[in-house]
Image (cartoon, rainbow, N blue to C red):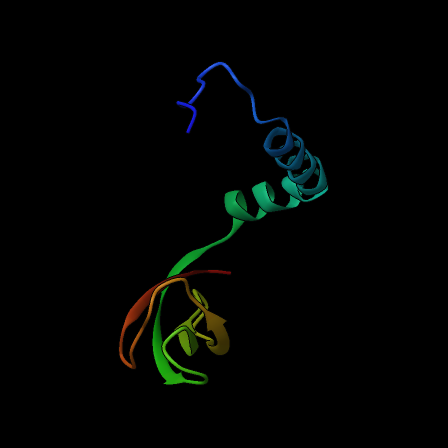
Length: 87
């Protein structure tokens, strides 16, 4: 077995990474705009739709309107958990 050559560049990985970067560029401005101007709020998990990663989340807007939506998370949640949302 050959020792790891630190000078060798993995061109396939660089090509795939560059392609993914170029493909996401059209969405960058809308993503940044949403992050800058969205309102952060605390939501509460009120129901689990398809296990702990797909939940029904309820929150109250600044003007007092109660909103419920289906969400998904990267971490497991349980009913009653508080999660940060943006709207």
